[in-house]
Length: 422
Length: 133
Image 1 (cartoon, chains in turn red, orange):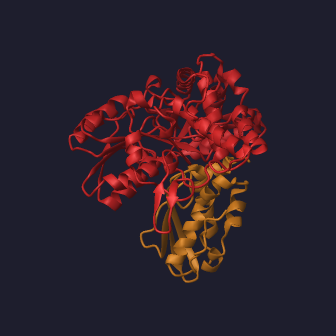
Image 2 (cartoon, one colour; image 1 turned 90 degrees about the horizontal axis):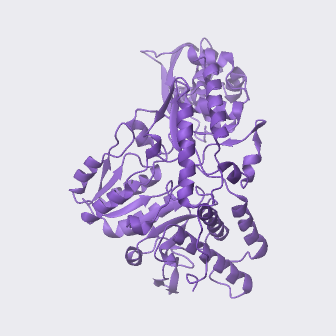
Image 3 (tube, helix red, strand yellow; image 1 turned 120 degrees about the vertical axis):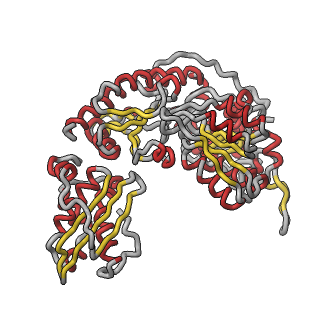
């Protein structure tokens, strides 16, 4: 019923500048340590525009009620708005049907859902799971747990020195007949955009199911699940201008229908008896308990915001700022940037400055120039090991990042050089 | 909120009591999973007194400088005095206010010190969370 609702098709390409877009984000007007906040950690979590904040507020103020239950006005309104958000998300990733969009808490939960349901039902001792050396812990640990329980084995696509997947090794691994391939669409450390379409098509040739960790790609570039022919796609709301506590699992219909439920509880059932139950239809079969209603609706507003900009344009904005940043940062003496060239990556730059520990660098940038960057292993310890790094500093960008932000970062890096007398 | 004062950087660049002891009477090591700071401490104890201390590690300036400063608070003091060393002593030595996110860096050496004394049977192990901030 809701899928047929008339939601206007998005009209992308109202080419707003990052400086203009920035005005929509109230937090970017605040100060830290007496300096204007320069937020360069969107890869960890993005900021939220007024449109998202107001939409969530409106839910709580105007139609706060549980969904899928009440037969009264505001509950029906809440249900309709939440299901409308699902349709918007389905449209963003070009899912055939909105019932293929399952709400979870975040990317981690989406991946765990696949591991615990599809993985449990389909993987057996000796079966092969292929991952990569660049995975975030959330696309690594669930598969380790699954392998430990089922006796399946794990193999890894290694990385080249410039942070790209060794596709020659991938082809060799495919000849061993893996059951499952799971990899990041975009690296959260190196920014590398992996050739997902080619990799998925090769996996399908040997009958493998593919899980794509799209936590960094859906927020930053056009992702079309039908074009990719992806089996499962996982992403988080809070990295794409939406709130925390809401994420998405997309799956092919046939796979989702076959899978046993994940968590049991209210909403995911059709009938319940004392000793047995039957399951609700998709997508609710996988959504036990009261969902994150405000968050789902908020994510819908974030999708509206991104769709109005157009994902091609979002990617172009970030590409521009990344090229600018790499150029500027390379002028800083002793600075090392990891990963591929700008045209092969998203808006993520991991780096080190001389022998300054990234945590010291992050503290200096915070205190001296009000720049927020990430420092550490970025939840990708195996990747750090691959490059012999204990930690890196990481600056990351989004639609609201302006060249002046990068200039402030570079100014802070020079300050760090002076403080550490390098 | 000025972490990187000259004396802190001096302890970082020129750590006091850096290295290890071949026949340590107490030894422990640990790392800080958040940022990968690593630290090991060796103590030589004669009678009631800690006669020598060495530490080795790598990590941020705060973790390494605080280890260097802590080593100065240890050497030559009695075991009883060393057991009493706490977070306040480390903060006093650093002379700066530390934000919650950096507490783990500042107190890594203190944690390793007390662990070494516990392993050597000189101090009761602190079982209820030495990680609180």
